[in-house]
Image (cartoon, rainbow, N blue to C red):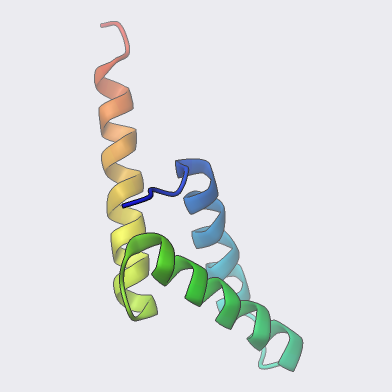
Length: 72
């Protein structure tokens, strides 16, 4: 399975969350729907809630792995 780069995944999550807080303007809804689709494809899921959870888990896991590489 192809894995999206972590910086791209992080940006997708933050962009989706920002648009999700905005009103129901058709352009905003379309962009949010596009981001939801991309997040689902990127995480191998079928709904946005699961995609966001999977993305956040992957990002948190990567951050904790990076922290273990830092010198003490």
